[in-house]
Length: 219
Image 1 (tube, one colour):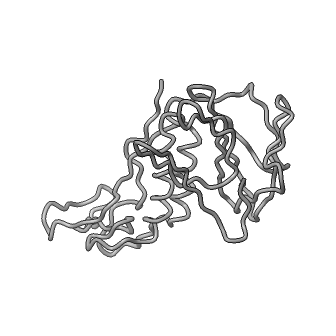
Image 2 (image 1 turned 135 degrees about the horizontal axis):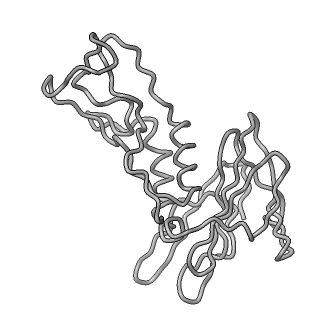
Image 3 (image 1 turned 60 degrees about the vertical axis):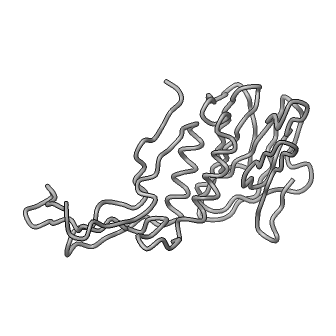
Protein backbone atom coordinates (compact mmCIF):
# COMPACT_ATOMS: atom_id res chain seq x y z
CA UNK A 1 0.00 0.00 0.00
CA UNK A 2 1.10 3.59 -0.62
CA UNK A 3 2.51 5.88 0.52
CA UNK A 4 5.29 3.99 2.30
CA UNK A 5 6.68 5.40 5.56
CA UNK A 6 9.67 4.46 7.71
CA UNK A 7 8.21 5.43 11.05
CA UNK A 8 11.35 5.04 13.17
CA UNK A 9 14.63 5.30 11.27
CA UNK A 10 17.33 4.76 13.87
CA UNK A 11 20.10 7.07 12.69
CA UNK A 12 22.17 6.96 15.88
CA UNK A 13 22.53 3.24 16.53
CA UNK A 14 21.35 1.44 19.62
CA UNK A 15 20.95 3.01 23.06
CA UNK A 16 24.24 3.42 24.93
CA UNK A 17 25.02 1.00 27.79
CA UNK A 18 27.48 1.66 30.61
CA UNK A 19 30.86 0.03 29.96
CA UNK A 20 29.94 -1.07 26.44
CA UNK A 21 31.54 0.06 23.20
CA UNK A 22 29.33 2.39 21.21
CA UNK A 23 29.52 2.18 17.41
CA UNK A 24 27.43 4.95 15.92
CA UNK A 25 26.70 4.87 12.17
CA UNK A 26 28.52 7.63 10.32
CA UNK A 27 26.94 10.63 8.63
CA UNK A 28 27.90 9.11 5.29
CA UNK A 29 26.13 5.82 6.09
CA UNK A 30 22.92 7.54 7.19
CA UNK A 31 22.97 9.84 4.16
CA UNK A 32 23.21 6.79 1.87
CA UNK A 33 20.43 4.94 3.71
CA UNK A 34 18.17 8.00 3.54
CA UNK A 35 18.71 8.13 -0.22
CA UNK A 36 17.74 4.44 -0.44
CA UNK A 37 14.47 5.23 1.34
CA UNK A 38 13.75 8.10 -1.06
CA UNK A 39 14.58 5.84 -4.03
CA UNK A 40 11.87 3.45 -2.78
CA UNK A 41 9.30 6.26 -2.87
CA UNK A 42 8.98 6.29 0.90
CA UNK A 43 8.83 8.93 3.61
CA UNK A 44 10.80 8.67 6.83
CA UNK A 45 10.99 9.81 10.43
CA UNK A 46 14.41 10.13 12.07
CA UNK A 47 14.95 8.72 15.56
CA UNK A 48 16.42 10.71 17.21
CA UNK A 49 17.09 14.04 15.50
CA UNK A 50 18.09 15.81 18.70
CA UNK A 51 19.91 14.28 21.67
CA UNK A 52 19.03 14.71 25.30
CA UNK A 53 19.11 13.17 28.73
CA UNK A 54 16.91 12.82 31.80
CA UNK A 55 19.61 13.42 34.45
CA UNK A 56 19.66 9.89 35.80
CA UNK A 57 15.95 9.13 35.81
CA UNK A 58 13.87 6.63 33.81
CA UNK A 59 16.71 4.39 32.66
CA UNK A 60 16.76 0.61 32.86
CA UNK A 61 18.53 -2.65 32.17
CA UNK A 62 18.74 -4.25 28.74
CA UNK A 63 17.66 -7.80 28.02
CA UNK A 64 21.06 -8.43 26.39
CA UNK A 65 22.56 -9.62 29.70
CA UNK A 66 22.25 -9.14 33.48
CA UNK A 67 24.98 -6.50 33.59
CA UNK A 68 23.92 -4.28 30.70
CA UNK A 69 22.58 -1.03 32.13
CA UNK A 70 21.35 1.66 29.76
CA UNK A 71 22.63 5.19 30.33
CA UNK A 72 20.20 8.04 30.90
CA UNK A 73 21.69 10.08 28.05
CA UNK A 74 20.26 9.82 24.54
CA UNK A 75 22.68 11.93 22.58
CA UNK A 76 24.28 9.10 20.61
CA UNK A 77 25.81 11.11 17.76
CA UNK A 78 22.50 12.67 16.74
CA UNK A 79 22.36 15.51 14.18
CA UNK A 80 21.69 17.99 17.00
CA UNK A 81 23.44 17.37 20.32
CA UNK A 82 21.80 17.76 23.72
CA UNK A 83 23.53 21.17 24.03
CA UNK A 84 22.06 22.29 20.68
CA UNK A 85 25.28 21.96 18.69
CA UNK A 86 24.93 20.98 15.03
CA UNK A 87 26.90 17.77 14.49
CA UNK A 88 28.27 15.92 11.44
CA UNK A 89 24.95 14.36 10.40
CA UNK A 90 23.02 17.61 10.48
CA UNK A 91 24.16 19.21 7.22
CA UNK A 92 23.95 16.30 4.73
CA UNK A 93 20.61 15.19 6.17
CA UNK A 94 19.23 18.74 6.08
CA UNK A 95 20.07 18.93 2.37
CA UNK A 96 18.29 15.62 1.72
CA UNK A 97 15.29 16.63 3.82
CA UNK A 98 14.88 19.84 1.86
CA UNK A 99 15.04 17.87 -1.40
CA UNK A 100 12.54 15.25 -0.19
CA UNK A 101 10.17 17.94 1.10
CA UNK A 102 10.33 19.92 -2.16
CA UNK A 103 9.43 16.83 -4.21
CA UNK A 104 7.26 15.09 -1.61
CA UNK A 105 4.23 14.82 -3.92
CA UNK A 106 6.36 13.11 -6.57
CA UNK A 107 8.21 10.78 -4.16
CA UNK A 108 5.34 9.70 -1.93
CA UNK A 109 2.88 9.23 -4.77
CA UNK A 110 5.27 7.42 -7.10
CA UNK A 111 5.40 3.85 -8.34
CA UNK A 112 8.29 2.07 -9.99
CA UNK A 113 8.06 2.54 -13.76
CA UNK A 114 9.72 -0.44 -15.43
CA UNK A 115 8.33 0.48 -18.85
CA UNK A 116 10.38 3.68 -18.97
CA UNK A 117 13.75 2.38 -20.14
CA UNK A 118 17.00 4.23 -19.55
CA UNK A 119 20.64 3.28 -20.02
CA UNK A 120 23.54 4.27 -17.78
CA UNK A 121 27.23 3.37 -17.64
CA UNK A 122 27.97 -0.33 -17.11
CA UNK A 123 28.28 -1.07 -13.40
CA UNK A 124 25.64 1.44 -12.33
CA UNK A 125 22.08 0.53 -11.44
CA UNK A 126 19.02 2.71 -12.05
CA UNK A 127 15.46 2.82 -10.76
CA UNK A 128 12.74 4.99 -12.32
CA UNK A 129 9.69 6.07 -10.33
CA UNK A 130 6.67 7.78 -11.91
CA UNK A 131 4.48 10.20 -10.02
CA UNK A 132 1.53 12.40 -10.85
CA UNK A 133 1.47 14.41 -14.09
CA UNK A 134 4.05 12.03 -15.65
CA UNK A 135 6.87 13.44 -13.52
CA UNK A 136 9.66 10.96 -12.82
CA UNK A 137 12.37 10.46 -10.23
CA UNK A 138 15.43 8.57 -11.50
CA UNK A 139 17.75 7.08 -8.87
CA UNK A 140 21.20 6.00 -10.08
CA UNK A 141 23.20 3.73 -7.77
CA UNK A 142 26.99 3.59 -7.76
CA UNK A 143 27.90 0.67 -5.51
CA UNK A 144 31.58 0.60 -6.50
CA UNK A 145 34.55 1.93 -4.54
CA UNK A 146 35.37 4.65 -7.04
CA UNK A 147 33.57 7.58 -8.71
CA UNK A 148 31.81 6.86 -11.99
CA UNK A 149 30.85 9.18 -14.85
CA UNK A 150 27.72 8.56 -16.86
CA UNK A 151 25.07 9.86 -19.19
CA UNK A 152 21.40 8.90 -19.08
CA UNK A 153 20.26 7.49 -22.40
CA UNK A 154 16.48 7.55 -22.98
CA UNK A 155 15.86 5.49 -26.15
CA UNK A 156 12.13 6.32 -26.37
CA UNK A 157 12.95 10.02 -26.57
CA UNK A 158 16.24 9.70 -28.42
CA UNK A 159 17.76 11.80 -25.66
CA UNK A 160 21.14 11.68 -23.99
CA UNK A 161 21.43 13.62 -20.73
CA UNK A 162 23.24 15.78 -19.96
CA UNK A 163 23.41 17.15 -23.48
CA UNK A 164 26.98 18.34 -22.89
CA UNK A 165 29.56 16.35 -20.97
CA UNK A 166 28.88 13.73 -18.30
CA UNK A 167 28.06 13.82 -14.61
CA UNK A 168 29.87 12.00 -11.84
CA UNK A 169 28.46 9.84 -9.04
CA UNK A 170 30.55 9.40 -5.91
CA UNK A 171 31.57 5.94 -4.63
CA UNK A 172 28.82 4.02 -2.82
CA UNK A 173 26.36 6.82 -3.48
CA UNK A 174 23.00 7.49 -5.14
CA UNK A 175 22.24 10.42 -7.44
CA UNK A 176 18.74 11.63 -8.23
CA UNK A 177 17.58 13.07 -11.55
CA UNK A 178 14.21 14.78 -11.91
CA UNK A 179 12.32 14.51 -15.22
CA UNK A 180 9.19 16.36 -16.42
CA UNK A 181 8.35 17.97 -13.09
CA UNK A 182 5.72 20.78 -13.21
CA UNK A 183 7.11 23.80 -11.37
CA UNK A 184 3.85 25.69 -11.92
CA UNK A 185 0.97 25.78 -14.41
CA UNK A 186 2.82 26.89 -17.52
CA UNK A 187 6.37 25.67 -16.79
CA UNK A 188 7.80 22.16 -16.59
CA UNK A 189 11.30 21.21 -15.46
CA UNK A 190 12.30 18.91 -18.32
CA UNK A 191 15.32 17.54 -16.50
CA UNK A 192 17.85 18.44 -13.82
CA UNK A 193 21.29 16.82 -13.93
CA UNK A 194 22.47 18.39 -10.68
CA UNK A 195 21.96 18.28 -6.93
CA UNK A 196 18.71 20.06 -6.10
CA UNK A 197 18.64 21.60 -2.67
CA UNK A 198 15.05 22.80 -2.65
CA UNK A 199 12.22 24.58 -4.42
CA UNK A 200 11.49 27.91 -2.77
CA UNK A 201 8.03 29.26 -3.55
CA UNK A 202 6.57 32.69 -2.85
CA UNK A 203 3.42 34.36 -4.13
CA UNK A 204 5.32 35.87 -7.08
CA UNK A 205 8.33 33.61 -7.66
CA UNK A 206 9.45 29.99 -7.77
CA UNK A 207 13.19 29.51 -7.24
CA UNK A 208 15.09 26.27 -7.85
CA UNK A 209 18.19 26.12 -5.64
CA UNK A 210 20.95 23.74 -6.78
CA UNK A 211 24.46 22.96 -5.55
CA UNK A 212 27.53 20.87 -6.33
CA UNK A 213 31.30 20.68 -6.22
CA UNK A 214 33.28 23.61 -7.61
CA UNK A 215 34.60 21.47 -10.47
CA UNK A 216 31.42 19.44 -10.89
CA UNK A 217 29.07 19.43 -13.90
CA UNK A 218 25.42 20.36 -13.83
CA UNK A 219 22.79 20.96 -16.51
